[in-house]
View (tube, rainbow, N blue to C red):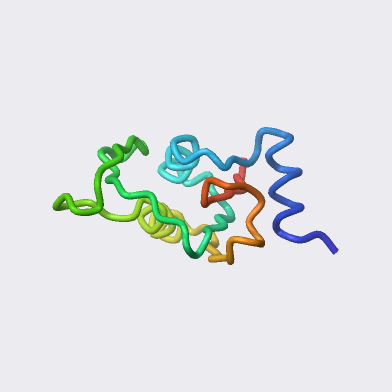
Length: 103
């Protein structure tokens, strides 16, 4: 039985997955993310600055700043994708996210 991590690894090797925040935000904005794995303890402070997935990093103390991974999760959920939060030791990489694209 294939795990989601295995599915992500295979999808990424075929250009249908990513652990890059910018690429995944753009795919999520287009409704392309089918499954999103988020690392439970990882935080990327910033804000999404457009509906096309552009973002800027910021300090968590700045007003209007959120965790970009939380924002990404909400966007994927809104677009009908599945969002799963996983412990660090089960994540396939170090970026805090792993996305499997629908197409």
